[in-house]
Image 1 (cartoon, helix red, strand yellow):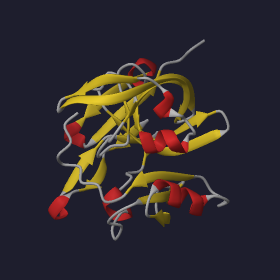
Image 2 (cartoon, one colour):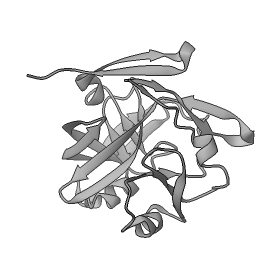
Image 3 (cartoon, helix red, strand yellow):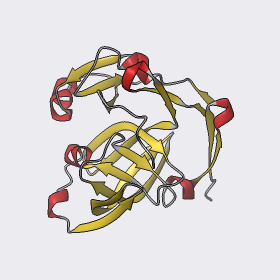
Length: 64
Length: 136
């Protein structure tokens, strides 16, 4: 079984801050908010499952 | 399950590849879905305080413990009994709630996901494989 690539570069294009809600198939951003609480409020009551992810982060500096 | 590394944005239009998986956490009636970094160097799972808030975990009432990252000490609050679903496999974990977690807000590590599954990184193919253990 193989999972398709989840491309956050494409998904987050145009979102410079806050959090986004991503569709269950990982193909599009369905909601955006200035913070997590805000985007969860917008997504409340939506039919499909969504995945929350921060926008505006830079990842190259991470060492874990 | 073979999973391609996820391209992530960076400064100056550069792209970073990272092993991320979709996960869903459950704390009673509260549910939260996000993407977790699969980190073989992490002792155990961590989430940020904002995710803990979304799961209605009163993390600021949990005694502070000190944790460490490669960058030095960090402020952590230990929460036991959080449920997680990863590709249909559900289990309970003990999680560190980290103040100021950045850039990744959710990480799975050796004490949790790596106990449940065989994980093989294939950086040269920009992918990794997760094979969950079978329990009778």
